[in-house]
Length: 383
Ligand SMILES: [Fe+2]
Image (cartoon, rainbow, N blue to C red; front, side):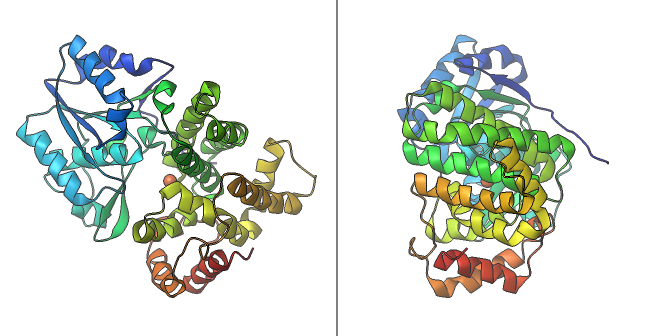
């Protein structure tokens, strides 16, 4: 057994903990760049609450509120230039995974004055980004504790993976998640589930990352349906915020896998939310991976207290359970139902085939034909 643990983020978790930003003012320096999306943190009031707290302790800030879903390098450069022009010294990201990932990339740009070569792998990061505070307002990405930033470049979702971009602080205030609507709860919650499961099955998984995976799945199984059906169920929202962070800690050590690789082209081409694409694909990918990871799949069923005692049957039960969860939350069974064009599957498969980063940690690395056949099964809804 050999593994490493790296958890450099100071996490504040608790209802009302947005105010903890005041406690870390000395880490923010002369001026903070606030990175957020165009709308939701304004409508929910979380951005103005954050700003009020910063004013209370005399922290200067500049606002960059142009992050869109699946942020691209153009947005990153714009934010990075704003950071440089205003002599900022730290970054506060508030919003969903897109805002936090964009903030990590803005941090990279601020230090290096370029971003694309780090996404393509042409260059490797050598310097830590400025102090970064991540304040998630959705429960799914886990980006507040991970070493990943996923950014769109030349119509592909590419990831920078580096311990130099892990946020220094994460503020997880469950009250900020109460304004998520049903769809966002579902799409982000199912992303967290895809992290927990792919993280467990990844060949990069460790005894440490697995603890977070099993615990996260237990919480999601119990609380995601509750969080989905009621925006007033604060306990469920709080637990989902916790599960999402747990899965973030997990994948920052284990990586994800083919579900993520196969979901990216769907998200870019059809604008399906990331977690929604993953949710639809999970049963088909896991069916393919089952012969290599059925013991871990069975352990998930055991952790959920649903074991039949037969490991292979239990692994198949996990796939059934995912299909049922999708049904319960109105995720269609097939790509055909979503209006995906069949003739595009080959283009998607080709792209996944080139994703060496995620292929190499898959428990059963598929070749091009196998990827295409998983897509075809998902297209037809054949398990
Ligand atoms: Fe994800």
